[in-house]
Length: 390
Image (cartoon, rainbow, N blue to C red; front, side, top):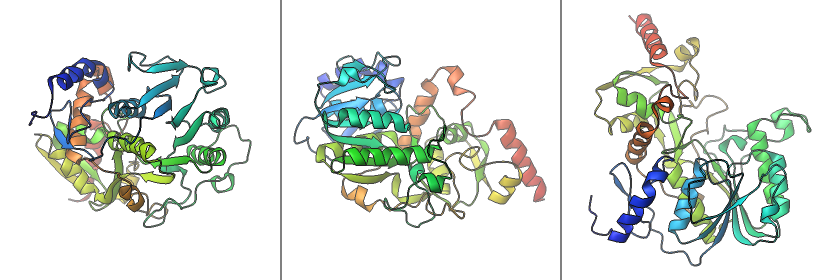
């Protein structure tokens, strides 16, 4: 790695904050140059964005979970002023220099009263009551409201390619009566979007990410694959090698959100990647390239996996074959997003740093993984497949 552009001050700053940040998968670095220094020892190019036109006052609702710390760190590196609002119960050691306001979105926003911010990042709310409360409370306190929704808000994922104007869930299309005690996740996200757009009709931005991956992800929905491939041996590979995949590294997503705020882009954006869908085979072979494991892949068709009770996107994370109703699940047209500076770091970087993050976790968090199949179940399915094809 060429470190000539890294000053002693940058090095000391990185060293000082790395200990607390790496536990959440945050890798502090210089964002004003061409290289971001990462914990895994990999240097990768980042989006060539000049300094922001002005310093923003940013309110982050939450900010201590998965995407929050990445958002906050990048915004700080870009020179913005951050206020965190949450219950003050988790990861309170992060960002000691940042203003922290305590409250509860379930009825207590008083610490936000009589304040002013340029933009609010609402990073993870899926409860319509919370979003109704926060948008109404903040309508005269923030100029712009950025809401993180989900690809799950779409009621129809059959279009190829998918665009942001595809229909989202309503009570009717979700098959749910208004006033129901529990609402499906996709409907909740769609309702929250509409609430944000109602209160901030001209100054709202809705982000619809797919599966968010990378350092700090505790769901293991992508982590399963780097960990499994790193273990070596015969790997159960699902479906057709050409099945498309679109996911998004948490850094690519959160860094672009900050730049969208800087440029005051409005609208609805899909946040998956890469722009050209990656075949499942390319994903698995690309992950293998960052390991030294002796690995082979055995591709098992979906009908056989169905018979074995192996489900897409659950037992086989990331993978969702383009079967009827899901043809567009991983075929989003990202032209509007790319035109506005959305970029995607190499798969090798994400895979390597996901492995580094995984092995930095306490042993009890490493095994068992929260997604995928166990080694024993994988071996059973592979044995059944080989037995059926003798």
